[in-house]
Length: 327
Image (cartoon, rainbow, N blue to C red):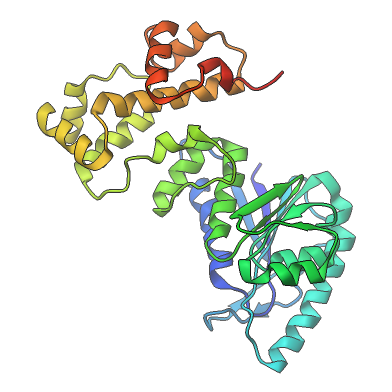
């Protein structure tokens, strides 16, 4: 079943706060390889039409539901700050309605719903008490406003986003994309999130240390189509016993020229690039399974656990076993 996602829209919706995270989920739903779940996007609010930060009105907004479906994700979209007196009154009325709805319906859903706050959406969540006792963040210019609005949350500055339990908050504007990519990674795994990030031509940034994500995006900040073809092929099937000659066939070039392309645009040799991907696969298997190292090595495309360890230590300081999650 598709995961229901409700974008809550208020007057003067900040358009990128809405469009960026929504595009992450739209693209994820269209990956076509089964790596990501389907998402059913809905747009709800106290008004059936709202103005936006860029002057484009949004119509056809559904009413706030009285019951949330199980597993729903509620996204509180931010708004543009500078508005006239009339628009401010309209916003105050609408936001009071949303605060009441959050307290009655969303808070009552408890663990059955996940709440994401984009930019100033955190202020609405704070007024509803959803951030009480939680770590949170918002746009850097609104952190003091968030502290004044609700002193109980622990406001963290200089963060792209913060997740505390079932509630996530993000900084402004494009940070909503970062937050939604992180949510997607938690639901579908890092490779699906990285595929969406590449499609959107954005970096996969995380608030914590997740080195398993970097290999899928590193060396992709170039515009050479032949090299991208090879990198796409390697990322799609890193376990395949690739030779440099086979990679060159994908690029329709010689092995020597392919090596030059990799060094110039990706900063690595073709085999080192492939090995980084296999190490990333191995790290996921170690962290998410109880397979022994020989089985991990075989599934990640290495000839043996000894071979895997030798390659691993070219790129990592810690041992493979240190990636295993605690029991």
